[in-house]
Image 1 (cartoon, rainbow, N blue to C red):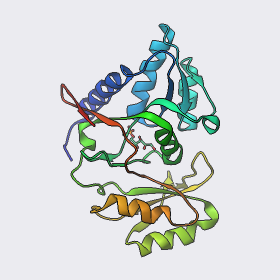
Image 2: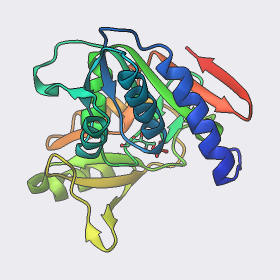
Image 3: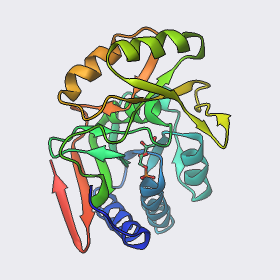
Length: 229
Ligand code: 5RP
């Protein structure tokens, strides 16, 4: 993972966000991710909407919905959409083959629904998120509370060391009322297989491995924009 300072990282996040927003057209239904990188894109979309861009959006979290609405972006009910034209979201790690780990912000379930519905699922990142192999960042797993111990033990069976996510000494609760287990599998040789194995655990709502759902990753590195697709 490249080491860069925060100002440089924010400049890269902004540049990637601006590059992604250029793909949004009048009339699009836009899926909005969650996180600091996506926030740059939502703010830019808000500006464009004020200048006359006509879009509707679906939000991957309550905080994204609140931000988008405050900027005048109309929000649709994700549960009733059968197609999203374009989505813009961040990632915690990605590889050149467009496999991702997401969910650092805990919004992975709705983010995965949005990516799955999207014709053009764009991920935006700074250069620090690019890795050769996924797994230095732990895999977030959203679990329905009454299945917590079962899912925790199943993750262990698969070779993962789980930790119940807490923030400020309080158990983290997702927008869907669930828990997050951050699962350390070490560097992951076969993310697709791990994704399939995790999907088979009853009570596991979603995990942060995003395999074969991303259309392109727009990465900003210093002054360059690099597109992986
Ligand atoms: C939230 C996510 C975010 O996209 C991911 O954590 C990256 O966040 P940031 O842009 O703040 O680095 O998956 O659930």
